[in-house]
Length: 106
Image (cartoon, rainbow, N blue to C red; front, side, top):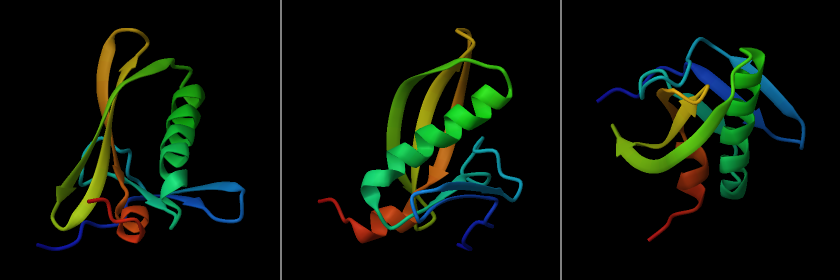
């Protein structure tokens, strides 16, 4: 199975946040937001930072209602379930293959 295209990247490197979007919106595995850090501890920070930026920019409020890590096509993803504006349920998919491949959990 081919590796999905790289739609969206969130880079965390030198301690500064730089968002670099290539079209993905996190709405599905195929449109996942890639977390590009080798520090597994920063993964959730990066996911939350991305959600905060997107929702604030759109003038929306949200609440995280669940998180799940899953494998698909040889890659590792986090799915974050949220409720937007206290009514609309959404899922956000983050490709966390890079950080998780450096921290293998058994």
